[in-house]
Image (cartoon, rainbow, N blue to C red; front, side, top):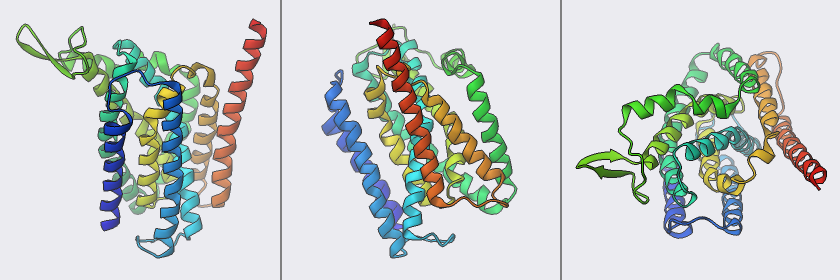
Length: 316
């Protein structure tokens, strides 16, 4: 239990450092600063793999699946990369939400910061529920496998921006909460004619939280296909979410240029779906899963950059 408490304290310390040191002022982040912060979160996440190795080497956590220290590290990094890659779609949706609510970039970090706190709580609940299902219902892997297979092909068939902009969730938020038409600085609530109302900042935050829940429905089963070890699943998931804010600002002006990452996400979802559906017949080596995920992401980035360079060359 003390390992879990220590991890949660580490997360809170990192969040406090982010809010009070890295981003204590509401201002438009500089590209160089965002790049450094993105690298910081990436290095923190990868460095934690050393902690994972130590914990499993000295058997400081329950190890019902008898995972080796090296295997635990591979599963952790695989889970981290899966969550990071699946978050690409989430970045597009966040951009659309901020655009719809006309949130200036200097206030966006505050919204995402509080969104992270909610995501940590909900992800913890989802992971606990998912692990319990995997451990107690053997047939649930086929359900999750079929669901991820459907998600993968459905993702290719629909436009995420159009789907989320006109979604039921957006209409639900606008009907449920009284949201003012104008911002009041970086405040989440304001008063209009003596009536307390939510500002567009709060509207964006609520919508981001709800859409994160939808993305978690996809990403949690995907990581559970790699391992059902709760600590590995939770830590890899949370570190990916922690870095999401910096990655969003780093890629804010380049999201359209990396649109071919969508096919990388499709390939990863397809792989984990097949892995779940065939788990009783085929056993994929731990290194193969990590290699496949890494190659899929690399190809998506490479093709996106190549297409971008081709368009720039044609323009000139």
